[in-house]
Length: 178
Image 1: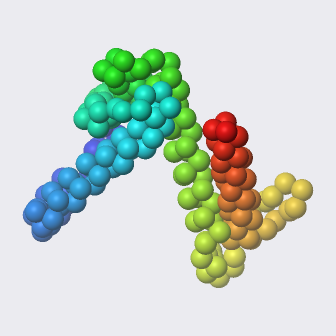
Image 2: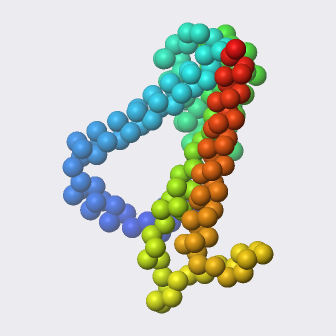
Image 3: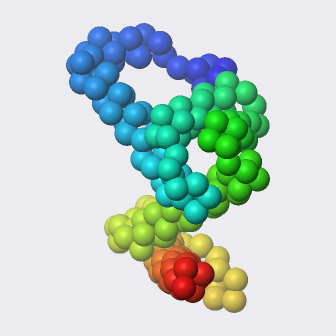
């Protein structure tokens, strides 16, 4: 927290809050926070469905919120372990299975970020320039290339890999559910 606030100008923060619409700010925070937790809880319920058909939304939501709070308050993201252990105990589901879904969830989060980064790279603005000349990077086995071209190719490769991974995942899911 110290590293975050050490150079913060609290006067400007106060001015920003005084000029903000407090009801709109509170509404955005509430919708954002509860919407995010609700969607994550529903996604987790979908992943847990093979282990238990009916899981209380209250337990999903509250354990997700508790896990986030523990992660914010302790080092090492311990809340990522607390959340599935707590839900496993509350819903009488094997903790190992619930921990596995939490791990898969994090892998899916990383894959989503990779896809978004790849899409951003493909859509990189063609006007990126430094001092009037295109920025370049050194690419092994290729040499100097424009960064936009490199990002476009990396993005295209990332998107193709993501599409292939999705195809394999859907194929495995279809094969396992026969």
